[in-house]
Amino acid sequence: GAVVSQHPSRVICKSGTSVKIECRSLDFQATTMFWYRQFPKQSLMLMATSNEGSKATYEQGVEKDKFLINHASLTLSTLTVTSAHPEDSSFYICSAAPLPTAETQYFGPGTRLLVL
Amino acid sequence: DAKTTQPNSMESNEEEPVHLPCNHSTISGTDYIHWYRQLPSQGPEYVIHGLTSNVNNRMASLAIAEDRKSSTLILHRATLRDAAVYYCILGEDDKIIFGKGTRLHILP
Figure 1 (cartoon, rainbow over the protein chains, first blue to last red):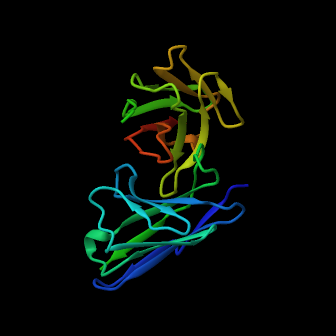
Figure 2 (figure 1 turned 45 degrees about the vertical axis):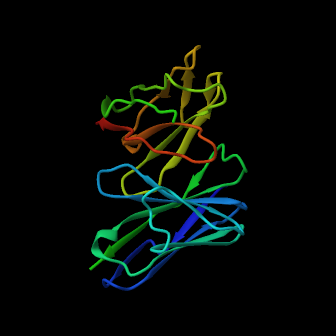
Figure 3 (figure 1 turned 30 degrees about the horizontal axis):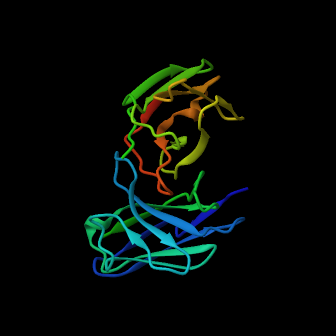
């Protein structure tokens, strides 16, 4: 149980375009989902907390207008990287918490974004 | 913020036990201790978590010091597939903040 999927698994886009990444909890409902970014040989960096039916909470230094998060249902959160630039190339990972207090989180397989 | 300290890297021989240490001297009474691991090019994977008592599951064991200021993740018989970065994390509200973790190398 507790499977989280991401789509697409990898994407290549041109600079200036927008890219949408989907995160789905397949066998549980998640009131809270989290988005992380990971650069090569670095740890995961929390970008934002996505709450179903309300606005996302962004970590310090993360531009909310550039990284749009929508959590319209209890099983789906989307991250849209707007006007992507090469420095946005990274590994984007989502996680979902089946409990309000998130004792355990389940992570997606990640989406590798390459902006040319 | 409650933080953890882990060695940057460790090596172990295949089919031998591995003990991964974690120090968390500023842990609060309500913080759970979580361990996740990340295999290359994959998202993190939950390993185990505990509060005060030692915990066992099919993947690993978690030994928690009596004063809770340190813990040890124990892989009883390491395989090549256990090569990964292991993260020791304290429960902090509902967010997981990742440190640098320990990169575990398994020698065949």
